[in-house]
Image (cartoon, rainbow, N blue to C red; front, side, top):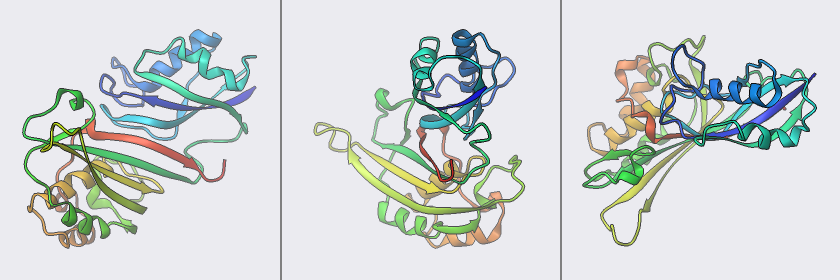
Length: 255
């Protein structure tokens, strides 16, 4: 028996999140079916991050145990043959049999993309949140600074969270803008990159939604500090829609 680790990228538009659900397509379910087709083994993969419905990933991590003789670095090619085009294994390797992706220290980076334009561009319909009107980017950066460090993020997670504790550490929040192209001079992307040691249910989407409200002038930047102090979901801003969110990378600190 050996344990294989996969790095998985996916477009989550047509899927009900990572975790298996009854009567709904999920990323985990598609991986399980592809591995069965490749090996003949009924396997349940274990994912490092259970992304929500409609959320994307470049670098989610999953492991599974197998008796297959397929070389560890060749699993990605074999599994990809059986996966739908929205899901791809980018890397595969063997890890220690006791390695568990949710029981080790990690550094995770998510990116939330906002499309700033008068009219929504169809090319970004499934991968960005269309926001009309100008955003005050500097105010958003000032607000984001209050979230850096170790805090109780209870105000920034869904009330349905099953987490035993809500303290997390955010290492950085970067907010960058870029032009879509030279022709559309009034259209650009705002990218909010958040890196931390872990995230609560809907945490990044609530951070993004709150920062957009700051950018629109609905909250002053310093109000974000008060939101943290209140430790109530109703204290923070809106939850941004899922399609703008992508899990960019998971760094394993003690694999």
